[in-house]
Length: 230
Image (cartoon, rainbow, N blue to C red):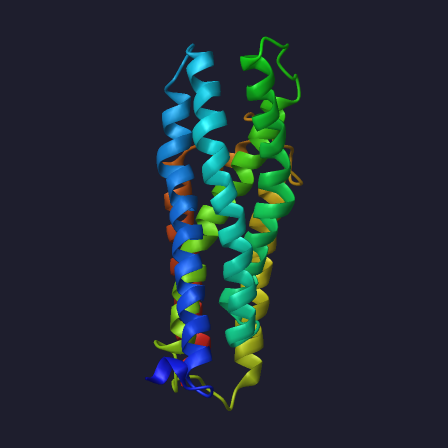
């Protein structure tokens, strides 16, 4: 059986594990943005019910989310190294561990404390806001990341303009600049994280994030057709 072949089996197994971890990561990302956040917002004044859900549901989901993210990233780097899609993937994984999880720990601790009869942490709301913005940014990046990750091995295979590295670098530079602007915006570096900041429109609802992610994908796809195709 090929899976036990030392030359072909291991790469196939690693790729399969990469895909499996990626399904868990991106699936949970979509769950958080399309299901959990809107659902928790609908709790209204049911603070205790929301805190129970945060402690019992969100805590478990976040565990799988962050470990699926790092597993996907490590296996992806082992398989293909750094490509344009991997730049987005690396940024998304960094958001998971350095921003989303860091701030969600505050939210989780606050939920447990309040359920135990303690005072609410005044920093919890701001931490939740920062985690939300980073999560929505990952949601926006995910469409383009998935497209170019798949395209690197299938859709663009053999179709690159290998005689024009300048065009490829132009594509990479434009992609990085666009991604950096969005990332800085999500971090509140372009006007803060308050809801009054109009630049945060892409993150204020999952519908806005869907639109922004779609626009980013179209822009990068058109650029790839112009600059990367032979």
